[in-house]
Image: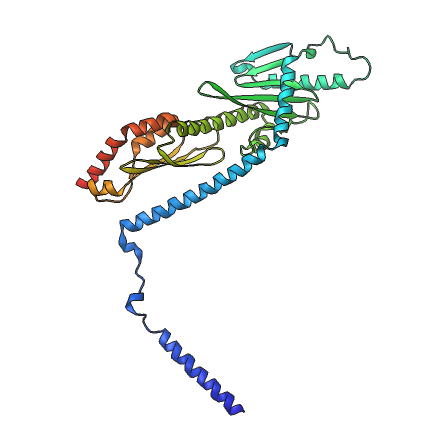
Length: 347
């Protein structure tokens, strides 16, 4: 029995040794894999295509997430918060005794401290039992609305300060947003009680960084965030409305601080990538515009397949609004393409 086992083991060893020797042999010539880098420009094109496809996939996911989050924000509870705050602001403006428009240095920390004092005095008056006419002769009985640029600041019941932000684009009014600040006492720091600002704008970060140390700067910064967001969004909406038939693909992040789109031209495919330094920027700080020759254009005019940077287009996008820059790009595109690719062919 043992001899049979030993014989079986010897056969397996001989078989494994044979397979090991065979696996060490050089594979047949037609299975040799050659590095693709020898293909030069074709390799560059494939790598660039992979990057573009990765970008498209990433922005497709962003768009899908945007739709899901937009649906969440449009639920009844979110609409109820907006409608409730809107009614409260309208009631405050209707009961005002005076509206003061502030310019420049008139809007300062001292005035904000006065507003805070007013809301706490009013809250204390309402909490007093018995005679409600106490403090009736005080200046703090006045219901004053403050207008600071596109912001409306008013005192709300319950020791709260309300800020209503009015946004616009090209001189036309857009949405209104609200932010309500609260503090337990005049000496305690204020906090954001509730707001109707889009969730993807960093309100809580601004609260942590600014509200306790510089409440006026916090109020102004939130207004800048909202107006810049509306401005970027409306620029994209306008080019889609005006030039939608020329734009093949368009992707953007939720706050519109990353924008990419493709312009379909008979000679070239133009890819535009825009990045904004921060969420208060209206013009992009990082711009890249590439022209990818189509097969017909390569056949008739040039031999290279590498894309060309359109620097004139990048300069326009850095200095003009998106619709204006787009019109400038399209107007000068034929001449720019001919100059670039003819120069390449002759060199």
